[in-house]
Length: 227
Ligand code: NI
Ligand code: MN
Image (cartoon, rainbow, N blue to C red; front, side):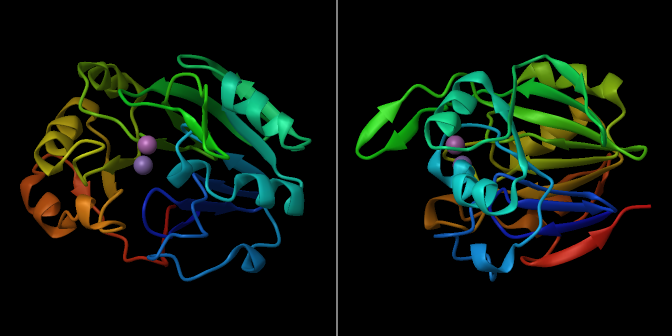
């Protein structure tokens, strides 16, 4: 599987017919060097919570590519109201089999309100995803503070975890280091940093502080390969 990091929380996963993006904050993301026009094929879009820097370009991408959008029930209803045709609503703690593999929604300690034309719309509870594709188990935490619930994820035997480190809205570096100790993933990729001055954390500092897992710092707009 090829994994590309477009900055913030934007992760692209590509494995044969499975071409998915998580939290597609493309427009307005200064770290991302592609535009919506550059994305012509997507099979799935995952949205962790309702904030604008995570919903991002979901509506435009779903309409353009016909991708199936996977998110919580409340955000699913919002996307339906915006004319998105293919949506699969899940909720926290639920696990579901799809044609490509298995998805579980995990909880996050955060908000999920959706800003829409100056109003705040109910976005349910924020979450993260465990996505299993071809024996690779990936965890994307979404935006979250440190929570002892992450200790439960140890039993999931995560291969690759994406954890926010930027602080202010999410875990900072020291809390993310504790999260790694709870989750015990084989490898961890820091996300949600440097997009805005207020989340200006140094991924190398995170790498130096993690002793229990392999830290992979993916440069913005660069890819790694998973076996
Ligand atoms: Ni958020
Ligand atoms: Mn965010």
